[in-house]
Image 1 (cartoon, rainbow, N blue to C red):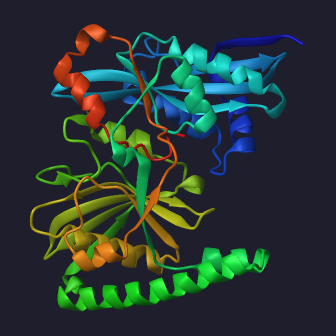
Image 2: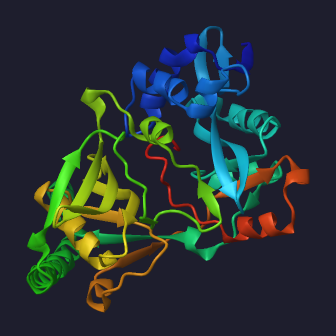
Length: 359
């Protein structure tokens, strides 16, 4: 048995897709993998500058994979480049090649720093042993949710009848009754019928002007542009699980929300949210809740950098705490990172606004 590890090339895409779909719930195809690189603004500008990642081969079969995605951040007004990991996979009987793939990624030194945002507990240990540090901000340990339906829970009961599942389903019914009552009351009180939602699958019409970004850090910003948004959210029509909501009030665009759909979990995540100063955050969140409820999704997941301005809506916010923090980094270009920039690494919060690109 001879195992070879080398850099990814275009000829590997189909084999990567087959390996990916074997281990991940959200399925991809050849075009998805091709667009991961072809539409990335950094990679598209200079295909020879950035590495795509690494694969492990036994004969001609791909048995392991880790991608390197070039990204741009602005930290304290200074542009910084990074690689993010994507889809660390090793076939079940070749698990021991995972540390080797992680080592290959950690040795990349042609960007300013390396980042991993989705490692499981075992992968986190691997990266820490390779010199990665944890983003310390406590907000990386939790996510927020609203429950708007419970069809997923009902299916769980049908598949497995147990006291625990019945109890959770009963409690969720009470929760849904009261949140629906509140949403209807809020809708009437603040005349939400004045708002109109335009649903758009195009991400070439994102309007950043004069809007507050509720899904980014203050001084550790993911570079936003039309090209980056096309890269993040472009999908083939048959696999389009994103939507761009343009929210207007009296014909004025007051907010935009990019939502990511997870049909397998019957969940929707707020990937990005922009509002202007003329609207309340809670009003926009209620509009989004109403939108996904009509689409028959159960859960709205979100993480924003501002507090909800309705104390009653806060009562329905469910916060899930994670046992460990999967967000890791390793600095390469230490000469670029003065003490002020290093402080921002402690303030960093992962808002997961790269759609499904970071997995």
